[in-house]
Image (cartoon, rainbow, N blue to C red):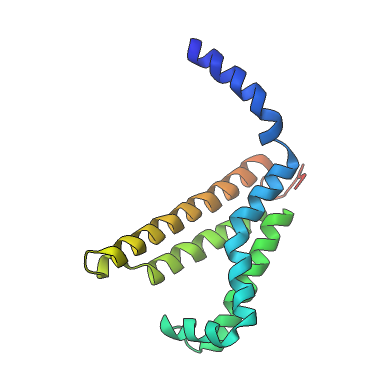
Length: 152
């Protein structure tokens, strides 16, 4: 009973901060930051983007590089601006999960530092998948696919 009372008091203190629209916008921007920064790096080093696609066996590499750039930037914009947020978050969750199994195959590495770092990267990306899934869940729960009542 006392813990519930303490929780209610603490929640009342932090609620104004955590429910502020600016914090929501900043949190969504932070969540999408890797999906904004990554494509920008690919744009400014398109040769590197092509090499990355070739490294993962994605051919024709230039087409895949352009597709990844457009996909990541457009899905991030939809999430940040609240347009089809649930669909964009689902898209980035699926994309991230697929890329995670492609790029972070820690189980193929021998024990040691590289395996440990790759495993950490794998589970960090699984965490991103969870975060995008929660964004989609919240958006659908709060607004539904019609977006009625949306305040972005």
